[in-house]
Length: 202
Length: 202
Image (cartoon, rainbow over all chains, first blue to last red):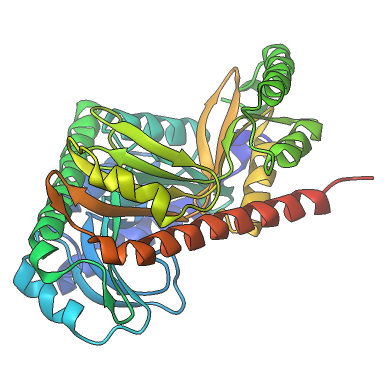
């Protein structure tokens, strides 16, 4: 397999247009995180890149046997900005089927690149920004998919069915740790913005 | 850049021999997890792959502001098999500089491949085994580095400096969840073994 021949350029360019349209629609509806939009646009402005999906980082409460499970699992709270004890308390005190996990994730961005050189450059930019868990997920005619991700991730067990693992008077500690992690994720996003800007050819 | 020319075959083959020697030394010293050795050997038996490092999954207690930080951070407990409340209790009750985290990680294996086709096949094998966070980390003349990793990961906050976030009577729940996660990691390793075996050409 020769690298140049992996991606079909015609298909890739069509998809880039399609994902740009989707991005603009998401923005109009208000789906798009404001703190990530300019970063996504910087990828689109690169000749050989575009973004497929993104999350700027978030705090989630999940009712699930284990935090990595999709099924059976339900997200009972989700926020892209710092949380308070008052927001979280009623959920911990409410019904829990499996276990209640507080999950903080840093930024995650999926980039499609036209060739391998561009994928490697995107990886270098990501590393520079402290997104050290980034990697190429797949290579096909539709594009080379690069996942940008940091090690910023918390999965804190709050309740195990009826048993409250974290008592009410310790909730303040957990909430403040979660907010700290969320902000660290946002800092990595700022670093990514800087690393992308540095490479803009003017 | 043409894929065939990324890796220098001579350098790569020399490194493969070197890492095989290292693996055998690690085994003699007793460094190597017994439950992962046959899997590593299956990679070495593939013409275009070898493994550079591995962990079969483990439970760790870390004293650190955040679990992803290397510095300042100290591992105060480490085990590759299920833990008990009795093992963990003295550590939680002992001195803590930052925060005490119980971190469970699933298997992680770093594979070096000679070309892109082999990297893609290794990724396919990994996906098949449920190691869904696998990806190509870097490409250079020394080899294409593929990281095999699952989403199995827990980071549970036990203590925040002087404040015990998880009280002693809830330790049983946390230990049992940690052991459950560790075993799920080992199951993914079994699935990887099966997926590798299926592809052995006899």
